[in-house]
Image (tube, rainbow, N blue to C red; front, side):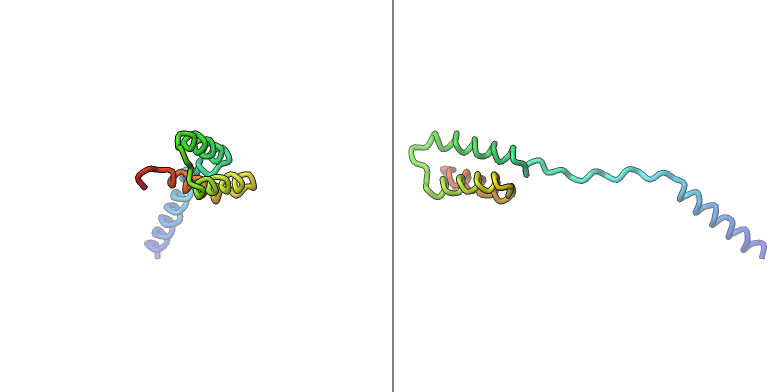
Length: 95
């Protein structure tokens, strides 16, 4: 009986010791910085700069860039960025 009481005391003390240890701060959530209106603006300006160097800009690329800009202005950031990236991709010479 004394052995059971000793084991119970050890278990309670061990549990208290484990619970008393401070827990490390949880890691902060990963912050995605590219889903912002600033990034939309950056892509729009980049498209304008790149397309200025082309003699002819395909209508599909121009339409995608315009739609991307409108979506970003409406607050649909991811969709806007997607359209702007596709517009830039279509301007690449070796796609």
